[in-house]
Length: 431
Ligand SMILES: Cc1cc2nc3c(=O)[nH]c(=O)nc-3n(C[C@H](O)[C@H](O)[C@H](O)COP(=O)(O)OP(=O)(O)OC[C@H]3O[C@@H](n4cnc5c(N)ncnc54)[C@H](O)[C@@H]3O)c2cc1C
Image (cartoon, rainbow, N blue to C red):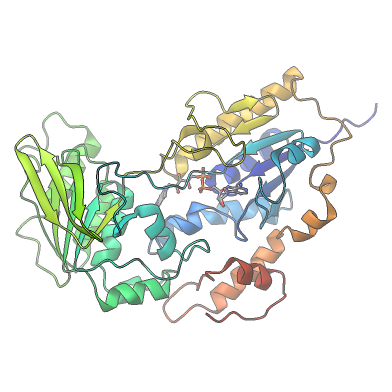
């Protein structure tokens, strides 16, 4: 019996979705070769560049993904942007199946008059700066004394936590030092966090609200009713959220140094006011209009779905059902479901996409042939360019060695320097 041809799978994007998919495929198809491409030098997507720098316990999920690469069963090919360095068609010519796990990263606009004014900044941009993303500048945009955060989900709470903390509160993080010290030298005096929803149905995780309450920083208040009876008609999470918000704004909580934070619920943004840059935001509720002065507005209202999907060049439309774009072409994670859901949701998503791929293999819709060579079939130039997992480990070790005092790493903020360190072409990087 001739040996059946090896199945070659390319996964584009090495964030949680791509890594979970590789895990599922390894289990289901142990003989397959898997290559995880990423446009960045580093693997792990938003685990490195979205999750807050002071939440290292969440970032530690990379340890289970590291095992994928260490086992040798999965190849990392960093610094390869699909659609720029190699086309989707070229990949499909060499791989039996290609899976898009490219995420979605454009901040959703507030979509009200004045949204484009200077000083209105998306949370994706800010969190990338705080995580030293190579696409972003080292400095934060000018924030000033009166910051309004629009949104009350977990990303909004991540931003609030950054803004209320002092520079000394980032021990054991990998926060971007320039941005931190710039903000710490002129921190906000007043922060207003505004949610369109009521306190009970706002999206923040109760644990994140408790974390704010436990910090010996900032004072909190709200003029809005949180809930007179938190135990009536609410599910468990909403009840704990209401209790946590009640404790945060309680007069019994000591007033700590730091900004005065006002929480507002049930207010819808109507327009951003200002001439050269933002000066205030106008909100409305059933009682009328509320104007909140602002030197900067941070929007944490999610990511844009009305984008063209970069790799396929087609309009993005999320699917909660199938990950199959065509036999042999799939999508998973935020590239499939749209930009919502925490890391664990990408696991179940990846498992179902892996099942679809396996079903297509079983039905013959994917038919591995010996003419497809996977990574080895790509041009020599591309293969030489790809940052391997071993090369990423060189950069990883460098970043840990260069960590400033009380930090776990110093992330290099420049793509070319990152690639040079990883490839052993430069020994040090100085900003
Ligand atoms: C600011 C922020 C904070 C968050 N905090 C938490 C948290 O604390 N806990 C939690 O559970 N979840 C958190 N999440 C949600 C979590 O990050 C997502 O659920 C998860 O990252 C989505 O995974 P993904 O792989 O689909 O996308 P991503 O993580 O975005 O990964 C996509 C990858 O694809 C690569 N890529 C894109 N285009 C190309 C291309 N053309 N060629 C090659 N590579 C490409 C990107 O470089 C990236 O590495 C947070 C999200 C954000 C935005």
